[in-house]
Image 1 (spheres, one colour):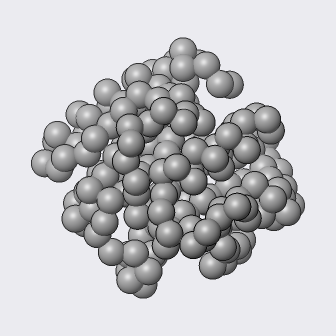
Image 2 (cartoon, helix red, strand yellow):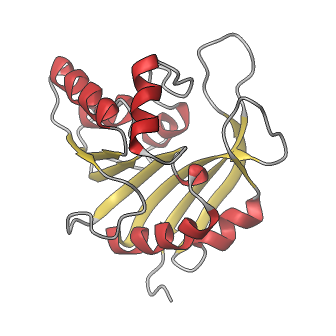
Image 3 (spheres, helix red, strand yellow):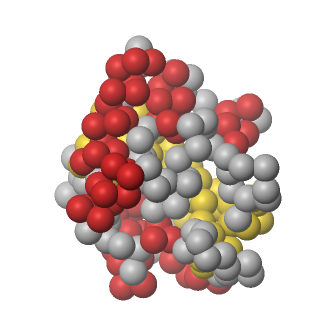
Length: 201
């Protein structure tokens, strides 16, 4: 499912199990442990804006992008209701033509692992252009050790390292459980925190 109309229909029908209505615990942990602090942040695949709005409430200068016009409209309404300012944009990723901004923190909860294999190198190239030395990138993906149907697309640790090691050093890559709205155990994933290299190849 890559077309914007498909994603629009998904949001219209509320078939969004990843959209749990509260900020992602893996991202919240970075703030609580003071690994990141207010800065210029980018939420890739922001959906209805929950995580972007949380970052804005915590003092970040946030841009959120998504392929779905319906999701972006929802996000703007939620940001207005929360009384925070977030720059939401309709964008299909990877997109090398994002406005010429450079971000200190980039967050991706489930966008990258939904891309086709041939789009992954272009996504990494895009990140190179959107970050600078020392920028942090938190990537959450499904874990191929435990595929679920339904569930998030999955990747191996080697695939993640292969995709980003040109431009980023890995501070960690560890297993975690995605947040969920039900009482069951969330899908297994990889939480990868990376730091932009000084002189990437």
